[in-house]
Figure (cartoon, rainbow, N blue to C red):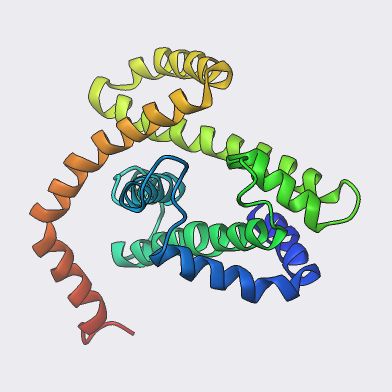
Length: 233
């Protein structure tokens, strides 16, 4: 699905290639001299930008949360560092590649300051960049599959945590409760859903980062053995 979405974004960028240099210029310009919101001031805008940027970045690639290692732990590999290197690619692909392409599409479309945000803004930008209904259709299809895969992923993470804490008997009740809250989230206000997700992401990050600090010597040792072992081919 990422490949499908990226081809759509690339098509928009190619068709509006003349606007791409200006789009990059706007990114760097407003990174250091942000446009203040009405009634606000630059400092507040920078703070809000950093806050939402970090929150959405963490949500997109789960870096530091300790959730994706649950899936990585199920992989069959001879060395844990191999899987760690594979897992690192999701940060590059999700945040740097997909988000950068999306951002360039939005900025080059000229709709970035029109008042829309999130999925509606992305849909409008793609619709503006591609002829007919192709742009909007690409975003809708991508969103459906992105959302579905996200739901499956987080369901798996929670299921494994519940199974570890309360054994297999608790898995079925968890699945029922998870489906219930998915339904609630689908009809709730988007801002409330994002706020709840950000809070729980933060609650996951704190113990995970503490664990990473405590295990740092083991991480360094395993990495050094992987790269510098004489027996490694």
